[in-house]
Length: 616
Image (spheres, rainbow, N blue to C red):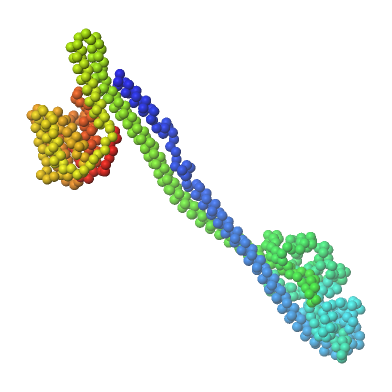
């Protein structure tokens, strides 16, 4: 009955204290590693970073290239402006010389002062033809003092009208030769040089020579390899005279090509379609420098204001620079850089992939090991808990069994005493037996209390040689069996830091077991010596008997509480000995002697742990 009850208590305790982790609950992954993958996020981040870096580099390169092209276009336009002004100055100097030679010719002078137009025309026509063929002089005029046209050599039929030119007015005011760009009534933009023709103190007239700027534009185009177009608003021109001027000068033009402007000279057969669209729409560029695409070509266009000698804006000069080759070269360079960067990035990606694969594999392996270790640790704790509860249940069963047997006898004796209450002698005998059973239960409970109570050691330096002698003498006086005890002790004191009371109790238990196991008349030996291996710091207190020894099948059970091979034993002596030695930081060993008998040895260190509480 008692053992079944104890087993039920043990089972219930085990089930009640079963860890929750044992209910097939999956092991929780450590924080930060729930995805188990580190390669993917790192490689994705690396790829995005590489794409951002390459994209930023290419974008920055395109911005730098655009700025460089814009700067080059501005520099080209500035070079054009400087070269154009230089050519104007040189041409003006050349025409100055022509006018000097012309005005010194007395025949020309006499014909002009005498008002003989036909004679003047015949005299200067060969010179004008030569100048037109060699230097592309387009204008040669003789003006009266009131600025009326006396003779236009380039247009002899058109005379008598007033020529309102700023250069003529300035020459009349200054009385010296002047030059500058002018937009004349024929719609041409020309460099004109005007010389006053003096007749004594008064001005007898003016000689005007001009060169249409188309030849200068062509020369600049050849030198700088730039396309140039000059555009003049229609509001400054007369269509009939402009068309007459085209036929007279042998130029081509289309008055109706654009609504509000005409191209007076251009190095291009046709304007690029974006520029033509701007002129058609009458739009002005948002910036003086723009970039256009026309039939697969990249063009930089700079718009320069065209001013006459009076600083009036008479049109615009469009300087067009073809950057297709440089832009294509830049695109090829960027493509090559992109390919090289992609290849390099792919190489680095591959290296990272291999490294991260190895790291991830090791990390996963480590994680699996940690998971397995955590699971094993949880299982180990569960098993330890189960073993503890099982041991508690078994201990409770043993205690119940040890107490149950005397109690059953007490009950039986009490019932018998009740039936024989009329026999005092018999009742007294039964009461003696009941008292004896109660004393046995009391002794057992007292032993259990001593075994399970909380005890604190009182360590102090103790001479083990004297302690062994005293314990042996006390044992011989308390046991009357007459078994001789031989002591093999060192000749010098052996002082260890121990609790003498606990050591004496342990030695007393070993001596009692040895005497119980030894045949009558055979000696029991107590020996204190250092270990034979010579390991310093340890001492061995051994008790040797001449009994049958310990069976091999129970060697691992003799220190288990309540285990005993004697019917009258409690199974608590050797567990108490083991616990006392463990409190001192030592250990207990048991071996069977070759000549017969057993050897129980207490191994004690010279310096044990500090004060320790014993909890059972």
